[in-house]
Amino acid sequence: MPRNLPLVMVACAILVDADGRVLVAERPKGREMAGLWEFPGGKVEPGESPEAALVRELAEELGIATATSCLAPCGFASHPYPAFHLLLLAFAIRKWQGRPAPREGQRLRWLRLNDLFGLAMPPADRPLLGQIAALL
Image 1 (cartoon, rainbow, N blue to C red):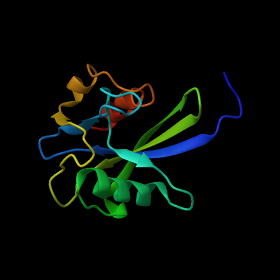
Image 2: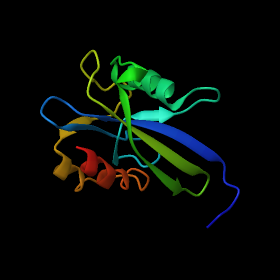
Image 3: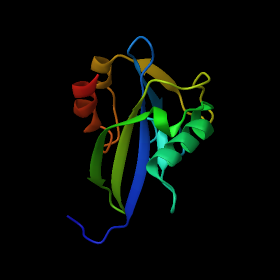
């Protein structure tokens, strides 16, 4: 396993609607891993907490508002990619304002937990499925 890779921290949302479905986003064309389904979120900037980063990313990506007090830590994944090591922090969210809408060219789908296991996902997202299943 490569050593001394830069660590990239990403916060992602496990948005759960009133019917118990989870929101996933398809990575758009032109981006790395285009066509794979992931949990919405993004990079934690220097000096930013994972919770603040996720609130910011959800507003930018989906046009929804939530508060850090609405985020419940629910899992993490660690995965080495060729150029960096990704630490993915997942937060379950059941309360937000607005209706999630794609703002960055991505497609969105609300799926039942069991349907998530059949999706093509980035290697870092896949380990979260078991953790999410244990909590939902």
